[in-house]
Image 1 (cartoon, rainbow, N blue to C red):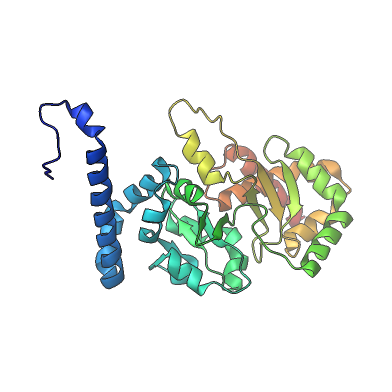
Image 2: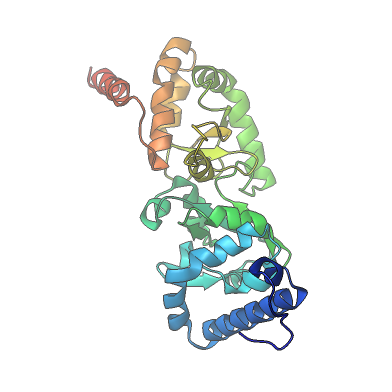
Length: 302
């Protein structure tokens, strides 16, 4: 890149701070992005090849500028999604296919695509044919956080406790189950103090007995990524909510023993560890978990 407007015999630092250089940099950046958008529109397969190599850097550009590059870069983004199997989808494509009453662009994050697809939080979205962006790179959630919305539609993690939209009838059922089993929920919360902040009835689950959701926008995957940073030393803690499926036989089994506080407390850790396993996490105390499972087997066979 050359220009007759550059000053001669000046330091590199002065040149980098030159308004002329900044203007040239902005123009070059825009030309490159426009070219990428053109390739994405005319030769999507070619764009996917580019994206697999450099997409992470594009998303880092959104995050590192605290969203200042949002308008420039948001239409270069493509993601895997629940309803598109192994194909990529743009944010514009996602929004175009949204149901009229859908309020958010949903997403979920995880270690890799295979692990994400097994998450129990996806069950209701899969059943209702609601698409969900599958974020499998560490930078993804941080870039989404900086975007905040796309074309005035906010992003929402399905791992967030407030993600699922429920009808009045569904909410009344949840309130009824919660009231009828208050002792069970209180005992489980007491037994899991330090591990979860609350235990609630889930409106997300279809087949799975339990799942873990989080509060205030900090997901388990973000917690993991932040704690991997130098000096973090596991100081970042997401507020975890243990959600129970009221239609699962396991919940019914717990309701039958809810008057036995010690028994409920004894098996509370099994529910939590099971939920964390479904999230793709390691069990901290494997021996204690196995001992509890064996104890349940013995009780069932007597």
